[in-house]
Image (cartoon, rainbow, N blue to C red; front, top):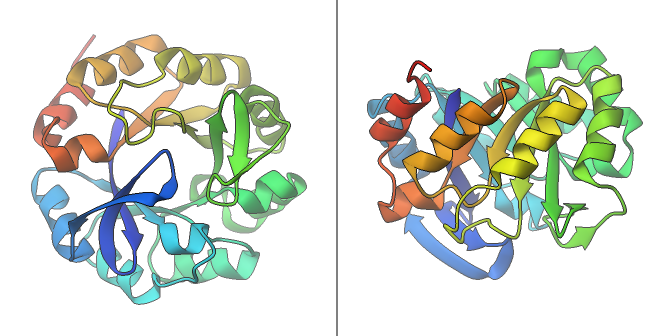
Length: 242
């Protein structure tokens, strides 16, 4: 299982929101690059970067930063504000290993298939961010009629392999991961699911590892920044033998 330490960027700072609410923001660092170097030095191979400004329609402030972060040697999984194939290409050119597509493919699901054909299955993930059981988009500000499993099935049929599943109700709350929801999505769709939202303990990581072999990894944000979790310990648990 892969551990993806999260760096959510807004206004050039590392921040965390609560349940995606722009009014509930805490700044944890004024240097995303220093934060990335810390996670790399703690042993991480991946970094999950969210361009919150882009996701919230505040503009893309991430171009130079993404190149800096890729320069650390970390593999970058990037999402937020990607609205076109040109946007995807620019990020891949900047050194991103994988992009996470949310609003773009939730509004027009058929674009997911075209994205895989253009850029490759390893370079594309879809965001199935759910609130009260339904997928949300536009920076989690607008809800759709789809459940994660319904939309996940559709994406899987198009050749998508990776899906980021965030339980919005738990995000930033440190109340524990939605292990059941993640495992159900993986089991019913066959997608390699990356869990996000509410992860607060090593037991959350163990439970996700044991729930389904199709759970690819877990994104950890607030728990790292508040000290509730140590990245070194999280990485060790992710590599435990069963």
